[in-house]
Length: 278
Image (cartoon, rainbow, N blue to C red; front, side, top):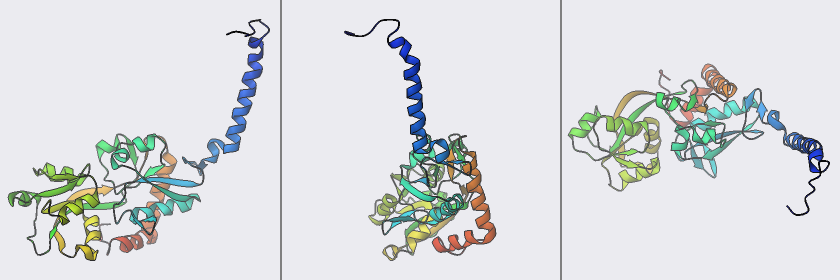
C-alpha cells in the first residue's frame, strides 16, 4: 500500500478512463479474433473458426478408424457432407466414449458434435441433443468359424460360453440384460483381442463392426454366429439446447443424402449391400 495516492482526485477519478480503455482493448481483441460471428456460419456456432470439430472414439470401424494417418469411415463421410454445405472442413478429435455420451466433451467446448456410432437412448438424450437416426443397428455374435449359430443370447448363456462385451455400450447392456456376466473390455480393439487370445469364447458387438472385422484376412478363423435385432438406431449429437442450427444442418445433410443416393453409396463403400430398411 506504500506510495499509493489516496487523494479523492487520484485513482478514483481515473477509473472511468481506465474502464473505457480496458473495454476498448477487449473490443479490439474480439474484433481481431472475429468475435462470435467469426465462429458462426449460416447460424451454426462453431468452437473453432473454419472447421466443424467432431468428437469420436477411435477406433470403431467401419464408422471411424485411422488409415494412413487419416481418420476415415462411414460417420466421417456423412459429417463431411454437412461440413461441405457449411463451407468448412471437418476436424476429428479422439475422445473417451464416456465423455461423449454424457455430453461433457461438448459442454467443455472440445467439439461441435459427436459422431461415434452412438445409439440414441433416452438416458443419453438427457445430456445431448440427437439428430434424426442415420443408421439402423443390430447386435451380432462373433466366434470361431464353424461353431454353432445362436438365435438368442439365452441360448448362449445356456451353452455356458464365456462372453466378451465392450464397456459402456448398448451391446454390453443388452448382454447383461439377458443375464450374461460378460467380460468387459475398454474398447473394440481390446474386445477383438480378447476373442483372439481366448480370454472369451464369443463376443457381442454391433453388427457393422463385426462385419468390418470379418473382411480382414487376419480374422479368417472367425464368423458371425448370431444376429440379434435390438431396434437400435444411431444418431449424431450436439450440445444440449445450445446449437439448434447445427442440429438442423446435420438432419438436412442426412435427409438429402438419403434422397439423392449419396447415403447408399457411403453405406456400400463401408459396410456392403444396403438393406431396404436403411
